[in-house]
Picture 1 (tube, rainbow, N blue to C red):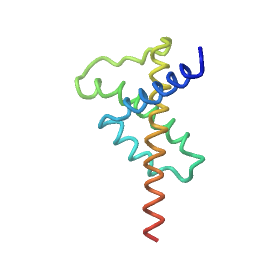
Picture 2: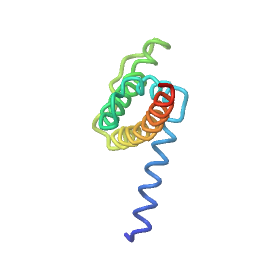
Picture 3: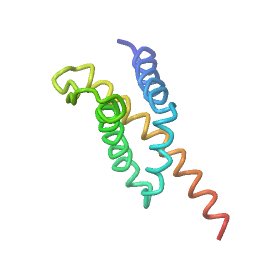
Length: 110
């Protein structure tokens, strides 16, 4: 694998993560999550929390809205962990951008 293929693979991973978060549910979770970010070095922890919140919502929404049976996510499948990793990277990007905007506008307000 040459360097260009590695860069393309990484870029596709980031793009896929951003697309996962770019839904209404993901943007609302990211907006709420950015309120809890105290500093840049904590963005990863808040993105991890947002990822967990999304997984919990995806499991519980069918149960609460449609009275479906409760089912755990497929924890033993590699596709699930790929989805979690992509989701985490997407939240990392979106929360980072929102936190940058928050810091920019709050700094100007003072």
